[in-house]
Length: 191
Image (cartoon, rainbow, N blue to C red; front, side, top):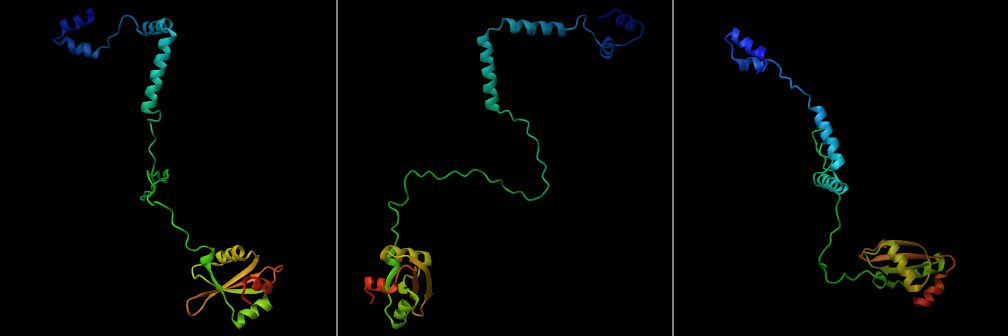
């Protein structure tokens, strides 16, 4: 204990511990120079192998913990929370749930049922270069066009459709200008 502190306690009836608490204690020598010297010595003495090992351990620690530990708090300005769109991976089934894919029931042969041979249909063939077919109700104009192309090997300019009162679908298939509807009708066997 310093002598001046003892002298103060002798004069006044005071606990020396209280005075020691109030007076700052100074160490005789600063420790910073020691620390620095020790650090320098460590770097000099440590071989390259251990340095690499410590570096690897530090990297491992960073990978495990993650470098973005200090995350800034997002300020929310609305009471509604919109869930962010996350990555949705495709399903990887162990086995197919259906043993075989379904057969397409609306193929070219199912789309076109038969050609119409009424008087008005014949008039369309002669005047408008148009063939008239009864087709499947579920078939659309594109499907009808492709079916006629495939079955009769002719180019189609346009398809018009209507559903008759009896529930059948009628298709007016206008052929391309370089095809003659009469010749095609003969080839098909309408006339």
